[in-house]
Image (tube, rainbow, N blue to C red; front, top):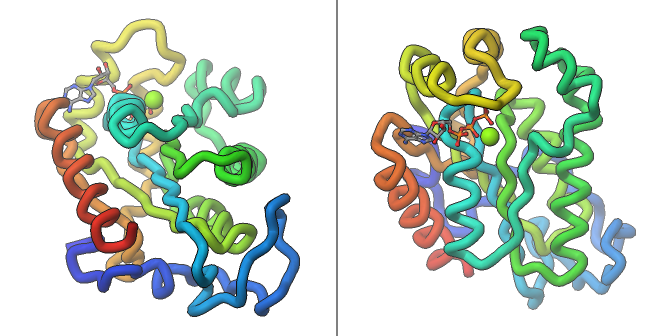
Length: 225
Ligand SMILES: Nc1ncnc2c1ncn2[C@@H]1O[C@H](COP(=O)(O)OP(=O)(O)OP(=O)(O)O)[C@@H](O)[C@H]1O
Ligand SMILES: [Mg+2]
């Protein structure tokens, strides 16, 4: 089973495969008064949680991310809104994005998240497919720039058949049903050692998925406020 199920509290230390800079290294944060780090985290500073709601097209990212942001009273970033126009044109035409198409988009989402926290937000919720390990690793770098940040992924897991049905019923969205297949083709489900991942069964009804996600988020917050 993926996720925090087997994780110790404060499991971010283990999850961060991205090497952290040495103590005293410069931070991107404007309020870079980070104390000497303990296992990569700032000592004596308030932590900020960055929640990425992830999964293929139609799994419920927007639905769940909006709900969590409201419930936690923290800002919400809709990843789709930060795609450059060229990416949207491609997706509208049913052409899958390449890794290089996604690179600037992911770094922009990371920058936007760090910036919300630098500007005073307690945490941030981001809806972003984050389909591959290397995409998730791009986001994990947020903790490199600001050691008060703990990154978590909420992976909404459902079958391709179910998501095809959901997307086919949805109107007025550029993400067509054929994007579901191409996203499943490249999907790298979170690995056992990605212990900053919470997996949710997204084949449940929307209310159950939201409740499940919030309960798991609250459990993480209780262990690591
Ligand atoms: N658990 C659920 N059960 C049934 N329908 C759902 C559920 N979650 C979301 N939906 C519906 O499925 C559709 C897709 O949901 P949503 O837009 O939240 O997914 P998404 O992952 O953000 O999709 P995209 O990747 O295209 O942005 C919407 O019409 C939404 O109302
Ligand atoms: Mg969405």
